Image (cartoon, rainbow, N blue to C red; front, side, top):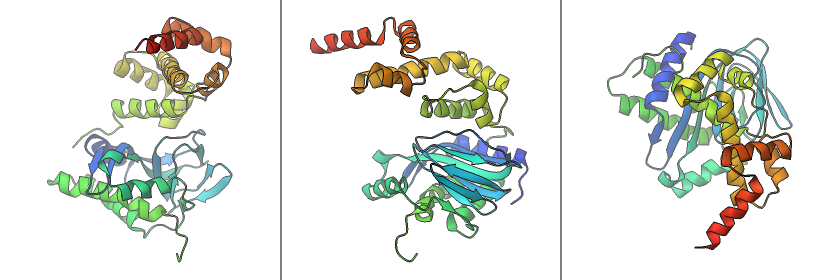
Length: 299
């Protein structure tokens, strides 16, 4: 399948705009992003809170997840499972398409929820020679169909997109027996959304602007500008507030120590964490929690 980078961007921009919420009879999905790169090089070690499926059309590289070091090349279909740190390594670049999504449990059947939850521990997350799998054939057909600008978009594109995501359950099941947009670049809102997801899921890491920009394949300057334009705040301010938001959540829902919360939210020392927390919340974390408990006890 030969798409130029401009065509890949256009097709995925259409899918990001119109195929983000997909509803079937038993399964409903929220798609965080559709994407594709003709030259994807080594990215940073990171994790997601959702599934990300990748299919390699060309190039050679390696996928690393925990103790696994797995070769990837043309025809490889692989799945990054939720909450597991992973990395794609390629010196010469991969021609790759990818989609990130999660199931909507409240809109899916109990069986559907059970099956997709089981994928999180599936041993079959790396599938070489997957060219003839239905999931791959549907994916390529979806991109071609999107490129054709069909009249019956809901039936032809959304139906096919939903079927594709549903088919991943079959592709990656742990078999124990026999076995309408015109943009040519990802939109600003899509890039910022992906950056926010990356930040949210990797708060314990350093999260330099340059690292997140590398992950998104944009320049640090461009990403910094997008945060100002789309969110009205600097990248640094956003990350700091996300760290404190998560810290407040952990402080009020767990019995973790201040030191544990500081580490989990990416602060080098308890002193620095306390200083930033007080700056954002008006008082240090211990005092904040004490007042919150006193207020709760009144009701």
